[in-house]
Length: 269
Image (cartoon, rainbow, N blue to C red; front, side, top):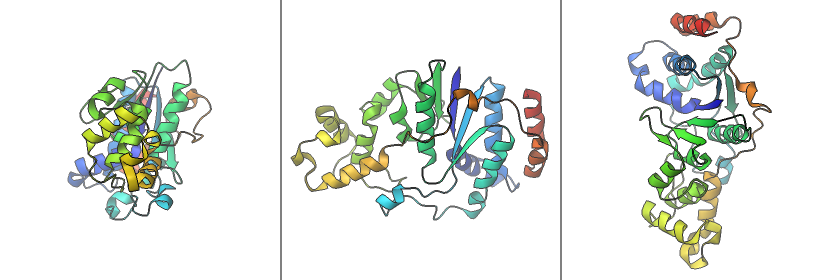
């Protein structure tokens, strides 16, 4: 079996800014994400889980005051977070709304759990977020960018970043991640970061003089970049097997303004 793990927050943003501005429906971005999931089912997907940020803030905000928050999100977009989660559940899709952890942590946890099952042939993590590159394992756990169509396996991670998946947290700690709100280490860019990691390995193994006064920040940023894999999302991978919508999904689709979606899902069921 192939397990598909979808970054629901990313997809909601993608549809909001990609189509919602031309869509006068209140929940246009929600129906966009549901349509994406429906397309995956139509193309043969059987096991799907969607992770969302129920709130943007997480435990990382307590570690670094400048870490990303929900401030500045368009209210019309923010109002679609919970409806997305409720609609996915009504559609019969496994959805994981995260509070203390982030959606990325849920994806990392789900990938870890699924990959431990020998019945699983491949795990596809559907997000371009570079954080998730740390979850890639050979050609069995891969990262898929829906927009570009690129599939990033171990070789793809090394080609893009110059380091293997296990060193992505070290890499991000050094170069920073503006989307997540931490700056990295001064005067260390992508090439220098890759060179240092190739030479010394993990940040904890760097000689003291390499990072100097910045060593504590580097270790903190690595903690921020390291995804958690301990979210208890499911005990058996078949728990995320799609078996059809819940009773009343047609009413949900109607309320969202997309009755055609209900017809697509009923046909699949």
